[in-house]
Image (cartoon, rainbow, N blue to C red; front, side, top):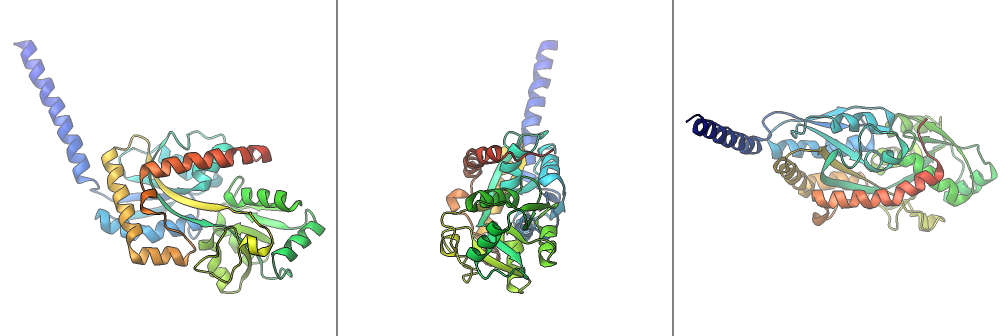
Length: 327
């Protein structure tokens, strides 16, 4: 009798647990979701997160709150999400830097792959080569000629050691055969403030951060690091046209949840992102920011995982060869 009773109680407990799991998946989300952006407000990653967050809120019927958790090249914010409860209520909007480059630059307390569940690729864009307004060079060829004639003189603003802007600068210096100095910031937004103020000479920056200042005439744009011009800024030449052929760099952003988040929750989040990226208003806003929306078959969690792995294979050897490492 005792054995039979124990069996029945055990069966009831298992059934209750399964029911609870199904109920969790069915009611998710039942409270606000925090979207951690590992950089200051106003930067490219933050801007993209804010563009899609309102549509996510509508799809999920819950507020999606942006929280900027800054510092150490995005490792503090990403690390917070890696350690968060895997319940779908704390997510990360990261990018090439946080989920690829940082794995080779920092001695992390988390793994950029193993401690996250991919949700979806959000957008991608090339870099812009931009300079302060007072720069006398009329085009990229003149800028390169000046930098070659004055090695170690120019100061590039970068969004932290090992950030895409920093790695792009190293790549650029090797490509043109000269050197320059760096001013490292806690994100692209404060770096851009100093470029606009004329305190640094140039930046490799994402269009969402740069284009408003290019359009207002506060900075100069010399080239876009892609094979084609931006639809949102067709007057800016490509690197091929500007005199630095083949110098292509793409910066992309994505969404991740903590490892162990139920697949039903990941699927619901992915569906909400897909819905947001299909919205015409969101597409127009991203296009205005110089962003490309990924094709539908590239918006799945599996596609983001595969793309991230390919980017690690591409960039980690470059970083290690350049000796880029945090102190």
